[in-house]
Image 1 (cartoon, one colour):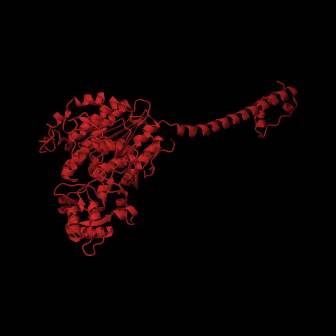
Image 2 (tube, rainbow, N blue to C red):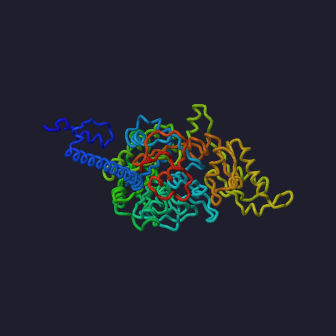
Image 3 (cartoon, helix red, strand yellow):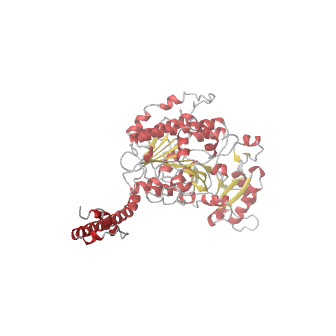
Length: 578
């Protein structure tokens, strides 16, 4: 064959197109028919290479452009479930860890666990904690300074949610009394800031927000002003109820749940592990039921009914469900954190969460659901338990308000110097103060003199075990100091707080039995903070964080406005590829 030693010319053409060394073949190079064919293949290969480079360049550009777009339009969770366990210290997670095989185990194993989450205010009580979790706001901004306080405008003690401008729905209207109590109609009107649910519904009006608990304040304050419904337990008729602030009648699913009459069955049921507990009541038929395992079971079952009845997470928008398990608190107050009943209640909470997660998984998908779990406060050990370990602490049998009233009367004369109020905040009667005069000179009474006498009396009464005293003037103007001073300022609202605030020594509490919570000490402030779901990086996080970081973190995850009073930060737990 003529030119048979040039059969490899396509390979040499490729080498030429790539500017690589070629095999030399004079006969090929000078053959006209091969020269034209050689030129043709070289052009084709060179053009192909240029096109390949262009295609790769375009593909890379498109990838760079579409990646941010995916991050901005990533699918949001279909459902956000915020669980609050009333009176649940962080160490309940570690002390009982081997007993958890359900919902708490799932959160600890697959979620983000913040091991050092603390409240940064006083008092550490139910209403305050529940208001902080989804507003991110301190009492100084939210106005929720306690479970109750003395309202100078109304001239009486009020609770954080009582509202006589609305009526009960699902239960008879109670008679209006001199005090505003937990059994009265309720609404979020005393909450001065927005909650996460308010911002969610403002951005997405079709979203639904539902709050559920035994206690009215625990259902209302986390769910906010714009919720579609907050539901709580009425211990008179055994119904889950709401108020006309939300609706004129109960939704069909809630009415159907109440018609099952489950409380009537539960009140007859024995607590197997602790059969001496009796849940019958001589007053309201179901008054003792919240302090039983069945209180939490009612909450979980009602939450299931809400998810199904409202089709939460199943309507193409993000919905929010807030659930507060109240029974842990009722039991804990009676027996203290070291009692076997508290361990039993914690295990049951783990099991109830698993039951709820399974329902959500079937209808919504847990892979489409963000779950947050925390607590509204911790609790102190009982003085009896502390005594066995030679720890400081005890019951306080002297009334601080009486001590101040007595001291002011002795120095400035008879009069009603103190207005009876709740908690460890003392309200002075400014009508008496204004009209009083010093005995010696007859000059008008100075506020500084009043505070000096009251403070001295409190600190000079050893039975009170007072660690510190802060006056209205100090907290209004700002007082330098440690975490205790900061906590007192965070909890002070000028329009609602008292005039003298007391901090008792660690371990000491007013009362004669059981235990309580209200202080700035770690046992009352250290709580769980667990987050799990799409967009959340699992793991253990040991840095110090605050509970009011939850609200801005969820707002960022959902791409909505941060609640108006939030002072928290975004937790370092969000996936960056969203």
